[in-house]
Image (cartoon, rainbow, N blue to C red; front, side, top):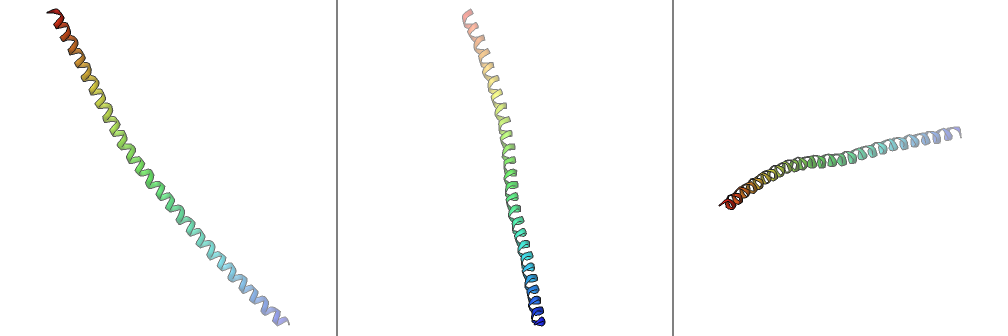
Length: 94
């Protein structure tokens, strides 16, 4: 009877150890899957941020060019305005 009890106890310990090992393996697999998932999402966000940064730089450059062109137009209109004033004064003095 004691022998039977010891055998059952050993079997129970072995089963418990097996379940413990299975739980450790499952926890490790879950951790790996979670890390891979997070890394994929972080990589996706990082790549999106890089694309956004590139687009921002392009937009900055285009905005600077637009400002430069607008200033040139303002100068041209101002010159034309001055020329028209001189021309009108010339016509009035004739």
